[in-house]
Image (tube, rainbow, N blue to C red; front, side, top):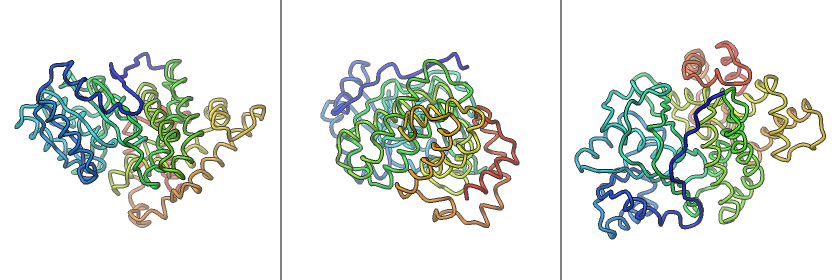
Length: 386
């Protein structure tokens, strides 16, 4: 069991939470801000609007929008150079998991100089960084409340997992109204990613009495709201439920650890540039089928929490219903199998499964799985998921 439980000191949720950005900066006497986001947030008009509101409040703002999906070390270093040039006292992250993860690492670099590889792993960031306020615009990663950042080392085709309390945002502004424009495909991918967070947090070997209620609430909310949010993008109740699920899932997995799905997902993202949420979603049913034997009772509770089985059914039957339910959910949400994803080539994938298995094990996440796999079993799981 993991004895540490870390979340941001301030989490503000609900419609209009974005309006608390200026007050949160002012209460900390922060005048110069680096706003970290991506091209989509600029094109949508949201990033310019947030920047304008900060300027209107008398703050000095530098916009850094060169974050790419699955941010790279180069993205982080470019953002850090911009931060140094403008003399920012704080960092604001606006967007999905990629801008937030990138901003986390940018914020620690003034007090923890590069190279970034020295932060890879658990508890490798010696010093606190600049204040960071995270504003998520997708209901998926939960990065706004986690002490985790994933940055791609493009030279070695490896995703560097960094976990340290110094990566925690100072404050998170969780405003579900920012997700109302999410397209259906993104809603589906990040929604199943959120479910993955809840499931892995609950079955992790490092789960605790503090993380369990958050994980189960996350799972319940996904069961109640994901498909409605996907079918009815303007449904405010469903969007609010999924945003809360994502935040609770983040709080849970960051303190109990993710497991095999994430371990196998990261190499797919690093080598094939598949977004994290969709790769998690594609792997979840296959990995769950492999893992249930190690925590039958917990997986049965998950099935019941989702409402996919009768409360009185035997645990073994409940776990079978869970696996079948995950496969059916992916079909209903039009989430493809690995073999149907455009960026994945069968021959290149087959040639890299050994490296992917080794990289998955090296990340440390599979060791927290209810059934700890060998490298050969991970290879077989990649092939089964294909």
